[in-house]
Image 1 (tube, rainbow, N blue to C red):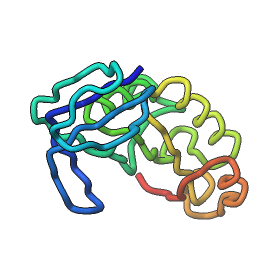
Image 2: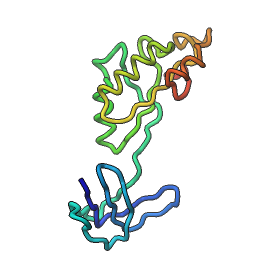
Image 3: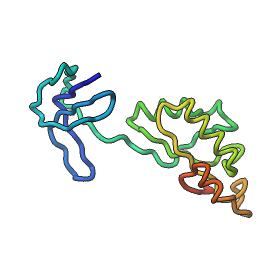
Image 4: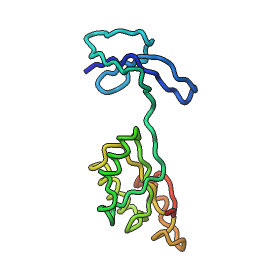
Length: 155
């Protein structure tokens, strides 16, 4: 499927610009950024964006998700849906769960659960110390191998 998004303003934070543009998308992937006056090409579906802003996805660092332990408060599904509604494409989650994310097994469970439930990317942090108690270091190397993005004992 090919779509041409026209009549939009493209935000490029790296360049510090906000410019009129058109964006060609093929199979869900941005194929080309075009001049704002571009017209439909090769049978592309034409979508008029009404002057709205197209920006890179937002990364939310330090998201509190209560899984495992207190899923009734905030699950990966509910947090992910709220994030997506606000333009967030990636959540970096905290390890302050019950139990704390302080072992490769817990981290792997959380990663698997997040991938099944959340409509956005989830990148988990792991605890710096066992039980987040500040006494005994976690196995940082094993946690890194299991996918921990960072380490913290935060609340």
